[in-house]
Image (cartoon, rainbow, N blue to C red; front, side, top):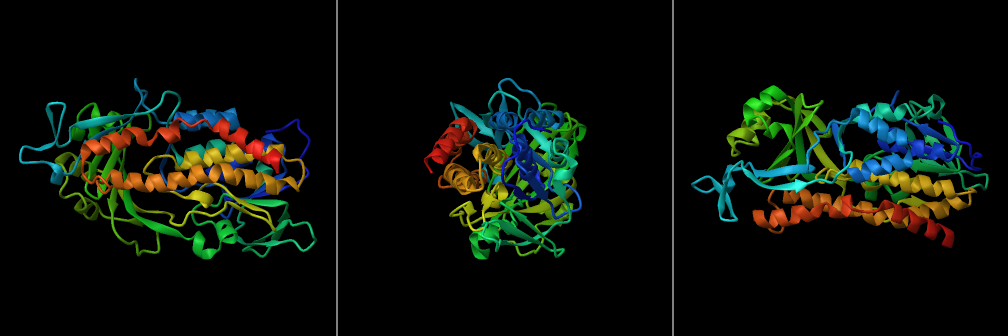
Length: 435
């Protein structure tokens, strides 16, 4: 992936080789910015299963590099619907039904347990879910092999003592490396976040939600739910829990993501094995359909959902120069399906701003402009996603008022999906020129 531009007179260290780190690498290579990507593992790898991108996010992929969008489309699992559908929302919790099985009276008709309450439309354009590891493989194809160094676990970052204000990276293997600046793409457990904000402010906290993930062969899903329902995205809401189902693997498998709530998470591990019996016990008061879904999940496990409880007061520091991107800056819960999309947005804005820099002196101004433009939007996602998790589980300010839930849900995603990020870039470039 070459560039006809002359190399920039500074060099960047990127910490972390996940989706954010690789996407930013691709963006910086486009501007011929010298860089090294440091990854703690022995190879590029992603944990977790599916991740979804909506059309607004796929457009940003294309703006960074058409190759990213093409890679996404090669591994995307999406059933094309007209009009596009995000989720059909139903009540799955028997505690909401009356003696007739009715959960809501709407427009003169009675809606019963498990029947559609409303649909949440998506936006037109390429969209869908991908397996994280498959998408990562597509990104790796766009990065030269000599860019990355593996088995480099970051321990600390200090200021160079040569008067340059460069950053010196200290790794667990005893080696060091000096760079003009460091960009932390090292996720929710970020070491770079600790260096920028301090250990206390950097700590992730349990969100009060955990999730069971598993798969059901599509034919079995149709036996449980009928011919049509498993082939499109469904959301079953309930008290202190909600269940999502949607097709993956070109419609051959139904993915299940089932959320539940608890006050604390005391296990040191965030992903733990579970038994089907333990999982099903969380849904004993739910509909027969939801109970059958849970009983037929293959190889379920539990994922505790953490986020950053304290909003970052800044995404960068100077002396030495460090900047935070993606989950290192704004780790969020998945209740609005936009966490990875925000990482892509970060990479677009920061990559384009660094492309405007012509000296090491410009880097602080770049980070300042990036921080001013990106921090309000990305931190808003952390807050509103937390609120959405409560909304889907009838815990929000309106409780189990389903009509209020519908009004909220139909407006909730607009600020994410309909935002023009190119205007944010224009604003950031203006801020850069003013410094």
